[in-house]
Length: 382
Ligand code: PMP
Image (cartoon, rainbow, N blue to C red; front, top):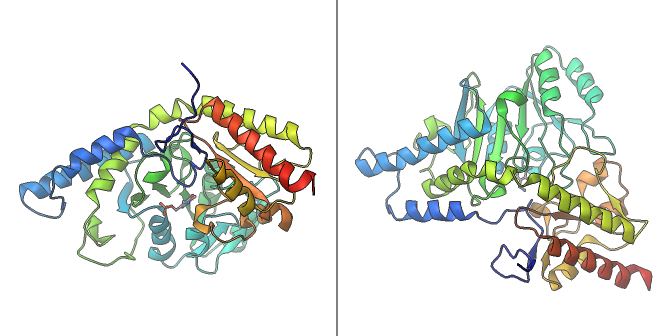
């Protein structure tokens, strides 16, 4: 068999290396969505048998989340429109807490937290635990919620969430983790992590965008931020998106299959980095010495702005990203890299390459060749 590029987007020449923005929709998800669509009426609040059918999909999805993400029985599940809403619900729906968040959280945490205390990260992108301890000591006596993402969307750096949760609990505070980028890429087990709240998003592991989950401790009082007809036990108004939730459920069942490919993906990512490092001594890979997601590489190309790199990659039919997709379109330096002590130039000239189960060795070669082409054209002969 020839080693054809993956072309998860249906075009065999296309190299998709932007899995952290969104993953290709898994075949099992498509199948499940089509089956559910054929039911035609899907309101889980209706009392008639059609409503019961829709409710059954919700119950099954909850069961799948519980077993695959290892959710303890004292935790509740609420379906949301995605990780953004789940994170907003944590920051805005639970009141009376002082917020402590890391400097590299997703904007859905950064911009919804109220006057947060910021935990810095070190040069390798890891949350400074000593600083966290200092902040927690200072706040002792007040109600505190700490939110630290499990893995960063730009660098892939994985945080010591279990250790963080232990420390947070010692101070009598509560701990949330945004696991949107981790689910389907590394093992995520809520019981093992010991956190009180956890966010996930379907389109980061083969589901469709517009579906996410917040898992939270039953003792917490959450006020809805979307107020409506009492759906989701009053926590989130609006008729549930049963189609997307069925997709999320199917995507969850496929997680063991995704995780079984993690070593292969890491090998390809490491090979990519090794080849890039051989091409230019000035290159930098952020968070390289940290524990990272197996699929992510945040690469600095000296003096070439990330949007120029991105457009050139796109002309070569290769999809990469300049950091978080949410801020694509604006060429602002990556705040994640700045928080890690990178220079403004480094933070403006880095791109994220994020691969996945459909990436093939030939894709890596194409990315490396293209990267060098852009580098030569924009720097060597200037
Ligand atoms: N948190 C993290 C870490 C993310 O990477 C993203 C998506 N970029 C989100 C939250 C928001 O997810 P959603 O698209 O489901 O709102």
